[in-house]
Length: 227
Picture 1: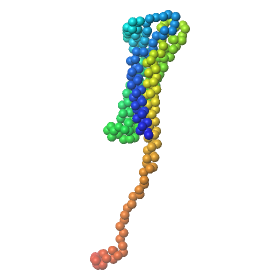
Picture 2: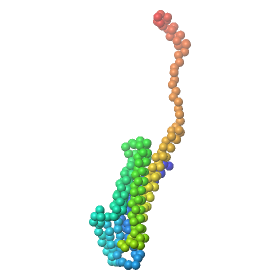
Picture 3: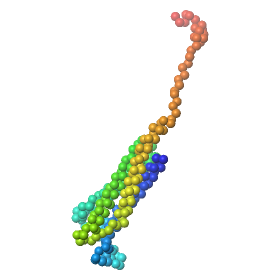
Picture 4: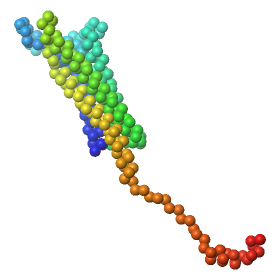
């Protein structure tokens, strides 16, 4: 049962990592809202790297943010968290591939595989947490500006990339929990396996010398042979 759980967790974490990789370059982190008194024909959508505008004819023009230091602090923080999440996910994916009990890489001992799976699960949990914090931090800033009546700039709504990022982070966390839980399951199974092994006592056969054999040997060599 634990082998099925760790395999399911591995593929779930791998899917979460793939979705995090798709979320990062996605253009629709936030989309300009049509709610308001001013009706515009342009739609603006942004992510962590660039901003785009689409006119009424459907033509899009994009431009990258000119300076990283000129960006808002939360955008820089979200960049760092998303990149960290993907790097941790790749490390967890590599350790998980080697640590799965259904794989055989270098004849690694079972106890070492269990430790590798526990570390891989920890990496995936941290990756999902970093992604969740980054997405939620970005969403909080969008909603804060949207509901602020004193904010005079362009108001945005949550883009589809945020929902994709939330799902990816949740999959990474759940997959990491499944991988980490196999460490506890394996430690419980090992003593039970030892208890089921039958005990076989070792027997040593000691040859016995009878009195008849001693008498025969005594008579064969005579009394003078023992002087």
